Length: 386
Image 1: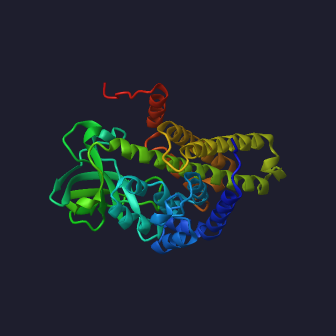
Image 2: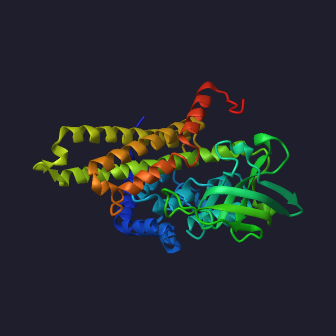
Image 3: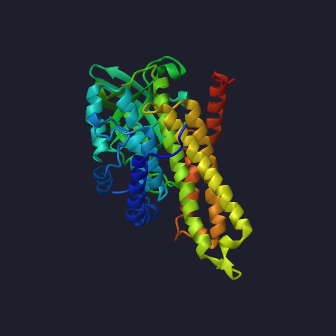
């Protein structure tokens, strides 16, 4: 068991770090202040630099590297902001991986290379007004009519809603109860019968648009079927990788906060000496470092155990739950150490704190991860309805 990164991984990490730190802070500030995502020109530049689809097979336009390589890069972008990292997230651990794994060859070839080239962004549409943590209660329905799929229903809390080019929509494809009737369909934003609600005004995630998706006899080609009814388990297997991405986005808020506050406490002087000279500050820094390192190792373990496949629900849920939790703690501690400067919108610390709370809600809330962990530990599912 070797915890060291290879020379190639270290070079990849440094390239991502150099680009993110030199090119993205001002862009992140604009995304935050105007609540709009990075430009498509920037996303295409990500592709040109080799930062999209790192763990996607080469024959589909990716670099063909592993999940760990992808998460290493994602953290460096997430340290700057969730908004500038989100296109990276979507290309490597988002719903496009379900398309790559389970869709027809023709749909894969039509969608995945465009994502890797920065020409398309694909988001996931899972939650509904009456189905969030209880996802199998979803009511959006799809039926097959000849060579088309017809969809009706509403999706809520879709990150990328109204902005992304296509959506992997979880829906009920048969009358079978619960998970047995659920599959997924890819719907492009130009599809007839699809409309969007207004952009949500959230506490954080500014620059990561979120909006309702409304399907009114929305029609897409039959080839857009990603997973048929009964494929909910497959979708959740792909989502285990997205959990690792969510955990890394949370980790990026914490590790970025720690890097900033380490610099701050060495420069800022009070009572005639730098803050770093006070023992209480030293102890707080040590606690923050332990939490960040532990979260990173849990996430990397999930990726390494999966090799180039999909991580287990146990590994991914442990990593996500812990990273989501410590991100809130570390960013809060960093804000306290920076005082008014941490609380000011002139600096990124308060944004990191707000985004950290969001990552602990998105993609399965912290407490739901604990239920997943216990289920995996005991080898059984628990019916929360009884």
